Image 1 (cartoon, rainbow, N blue to C red):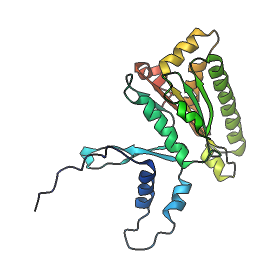
Image 2: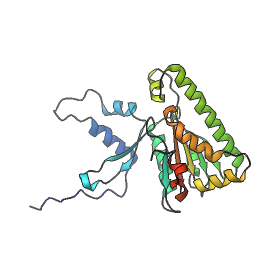
Image 3: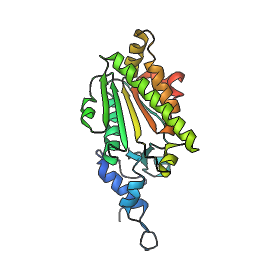
Image 4: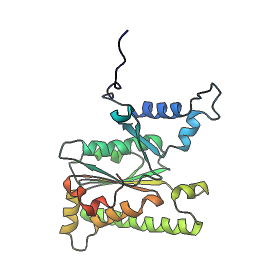
Length: 239
């Protein structure tokens, strides 16, 4: 008999999002006693579809390979930091694609600002995508972010009037506002555009949305390089 391997098998090179999600909800609701589960996995999956299952990570010290999960209700913003051609744009786009596969266009609104190489253009075909704006249109970027800031203020006022703190709690009361994902690919380029336009606050608006938006259902995704490691940006993001 071969000796037991002291480590887990390597992570798979390819993960299929639908299979990953199905395995997650199925495993979470298998009975360890042989009794039938009280609810089907698909019922629970529907309730928790705002939990975006992005992949697996290897944790050798605990001999586990837990799922990477980001909750639109609680997770906050995400930075994707790397050099050019490191896969940061692909990772950002994958988040939106997976989220769109779990949520309907009525439940998820995406706004995309592509200041990099145009690799997110295909996201504009999603019915969830309200805007796809490139760096050639700085005024449109500014206007979009101002509109999103106004929507954030409106939602904060609604939550206050309902006496709740989060959009998830508002959903429980019957106010089914959609989750909002704002994606910015190319942080350094956005900062340069903002600094070149007098009175433009685009970069500051993105940070403010990332910092104060999660409770109101906003998730901000930003890709970039070393500038995202600066305290000015890092203080606004959860991951």
